[in-house]
Amino acid sequence: MRHDIQPNERAFSSKEVAEEVGIATPTVRKYGQILERNGYEFLKDGDRRIFVQSDIKALIALRDTDKPLDDTAKDLVEQQKERLEGSNETEIAINDTYENNLPHDPNQLKEVLMFLVKELAATREMNVQLTNDMSQLKTKISQLQQDHHVISSSIGNSAKRTNAKIEKLTEQQNNHYETLLQQEQQRSELLQKEIQNMRDEQKREWSSQNDFNNRLEEAVQERKSKWGGLFSIFRK
Image 1 (cartoon, one colour):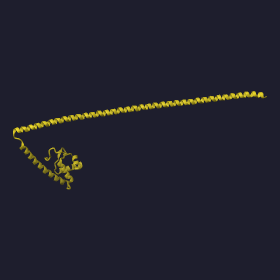
Image 2 (cartoon, rainbow, N blue to C red; image 1 turned 90 degrees about the horizontal axis):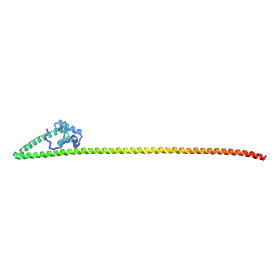
Image 3 (cartoon, rainbow, N blue to C red; image 1 turned 30 degrees about the vertical axis):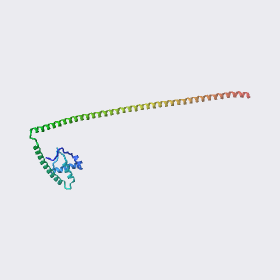
Image 4 (cartoon, rainbow, N blue to C red; image 1 turned 135 degrees about the vertical axis):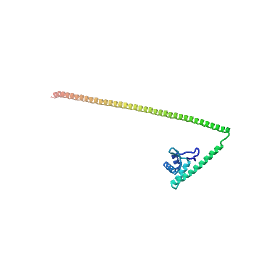
């Protein structure tokens, strides 16, 4: 079990380690397997490795080594064992120090306990406040999502109404154009009929005039023949 982790020390995922070390994520897994094969200990969350700063240094050493990876991994395992042994001794010393520094006076012990109770109460109150803040934040986010939905729906409905009006106006214009076109066609047909009627009337007038001229000419000729016979009598 590892005892070299510092309080509040940051943990890194495989992807973050890959970016930190400058290698690919599969390479991080490969180096981790090599280290574990030689006895190196990682923090684990199930089967997933959790990396701390000392683990990153070990991966950098594997990345930059000129020796075979297993040889370098063995050296790193020895360094980790020494570090773990040192951390165990430090932990024991710290525990002894705490035990020696604990007050033996009941009044002092009571004061320490009261202080701890107050700190716990303040922490509990802070947790309650954080919970309330999170609840309010969730409520605001939910309200914002609803407002966004309402705005989106309003914009969509307005766009639909606008499109419907445009389509209606376009249909009205098309109908008006068709009506004007039909009226123009009807006027053109009437005009053509009138022109044809005028032509027919003119032809009839010409025909009538021609008939009149022919009858007049026949009458003149007939009179000439009559008057010509009369004149022939006088000449005899």
